[in-house]
Image 1 (cartoon, one colour):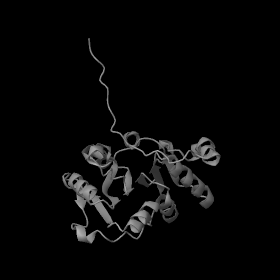
Image 2: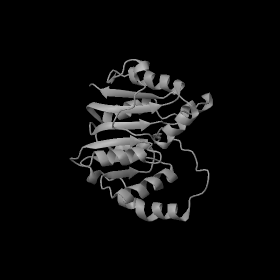
Image 3: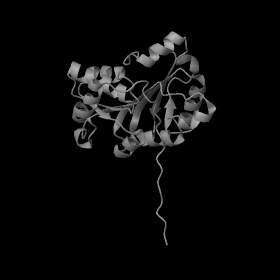
Image 4: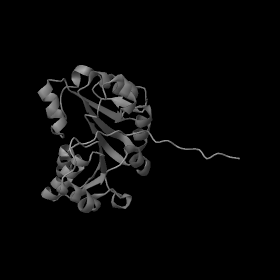
Length: 221
């Protein structure tokens, strides 16, 4: 008798909010989110950016304003961050943002191959304790998946203020012959790209005095 194989998705861990959602936040998720949910039909034949783990949405709002003719897809599972983005989308009257509020690996399986121009991963949780390394987003499996959806010559921006995570990120991307590390040297990774702004998490890194690294990779094949 044949056994059905169970296909496991890599986990995309999230931290729980420190406090429960307010009534306004609950209403935004219940009534407003549906107007901005990711739908494959809405992105056909359009140029697309993807931000993975958009936090409170500062960068995705900035990208949408600067690129009105492109669709900006944001993936995030942190509900307070999603509600903050929703408020700002409506405040700025933006029409080119779509939200995917679930596991990023589900979204990666929905996106067409070679369909994304740029990917932004700004300050992914470094999960600094060794016992939590398995929770890190950027792994061999993840890099393989994004290499499939990114267009040739497409760009990936990754920011981190964790030296340990920096080494892991570089190791994973440099092991893939599909990517070129554009800066080539760590000492050249201290200048933020002009198209991006400081997020809440980057400001926290500034307060802590952490050294920040701005990595840029290009898909070459």
